[in-house]
Length: 123
Image (cartoon, rainbow, N blue to C red; front, top):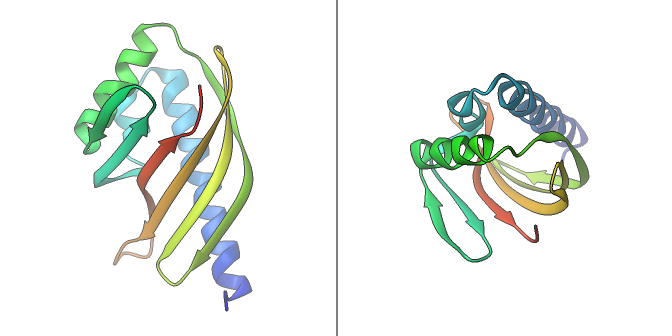
């Protein structure tokens, strides 16, 4: 059973990662956006080869920025954690419309959460 305090901490970390991502995106800082991902993270999107690792994720984010994409915020529809793993489903609000994403997350030895897998469910 999930500890309510553990769930709150996970949700707070998720919200913090999202807020940092949006702030970095608005500054045009792709590497700052990618800091919320683990070093070995993977991003899966329809019709695109898997994007592997924080450096490749930052490059993909930079390409999206260069193409004029704007991301205004994320709305979390569900978030749950148990132990050192968690997941969330979110609606990503962008200049291209809203899209659904699912995040798999893990808690590091430092106690901080990071995204280890992101699956874009639609664009």
